[in-house]
Image (cartoon, rainbow, N blue to C red; front, side):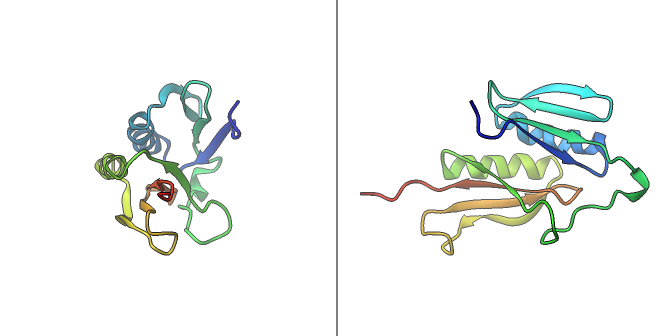
Length: 135
């Protein structure tokens, strides 16, 4: 059983959010479940479901600002640096903005390789590879 059952994220523009999330999530192996009213969802086997919601009030749908109270970011663990690079390219091609290019982040450790991207709604995700320290 997964530790996290589902994650819901509200986006400024639902059709645009679906397009941006679909590219990334399907590249990660999630299957698109479809759109239901004001939301769309993706799932992977028995793992966590990710749901994108339309805002309750479209007139008051400002993008999230990183560093403010609320969402910080979601990190997806990758099996290799090449996978970080691949997912980064998929996201950028789907319209996600680059926050930080793929590189080693020595402030975490000398093996931590990651990239950070953000969608039109200010939702930030990270692709990271942090292999175990060699014995």
